Image 1 (cartoon, rainbow, N blue to C red):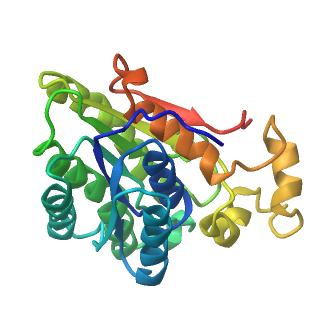
Image 2 (tube, rainbow, N blue to C red; image 1 turned 45 degrees about the vertical axis):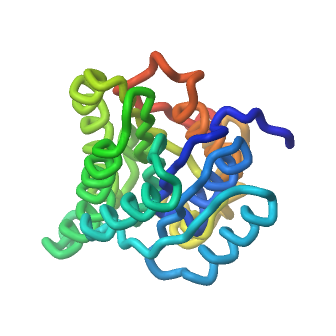
Length: 259
């Protein structure tokens, strides 16, 4: 596929960029001309391989270890990008963790872990990125369709993502004064390793384990399949581009028509 050069001369930070949707976002932005800094927590091998792939294709790319649960590591990721590329135009905050459990088994430690990564981590990613952005800066956070639909045992995760949607709504007023937009993507089911590990949790308990993800998708999604990561990445690229210059404070659902 041939992309436009919408991000020529611009620099982007992608948290959670070594795998899944984050890696697809890195490929898409780099494919449209952006220099990209890929944040990763544990999988250095995957991050380095992605950087090598992007450099082979002619893109500028670096990998920086940064646990999204630690705001100081996120700050260091942003600073590394600015030092390497001389600017920062785009933040794609893709790092996140899943959680399924019934109400009676949710612990304070689980609450802290999920909200630390999915909510606090994204807030401080936005804070550190915005500090280096001028007018035209783009911040794209990650919510989930789970924020607006009921799933058994998904309360903690869904709440952490619903908070992100409130964050972008309120940050839009503040950052809009500086010409920076802030939006979120709410992906539906996507063919990633996370979906392979946790996808069965989205099924009704009476069906869990009885349907494959393909069978479940055919019943629950208008397009009858999971998204490919590249399809979700296209939505991040849209919100990060000048094509979305008059869109801020909003969450864009990209779910294939989930019902």
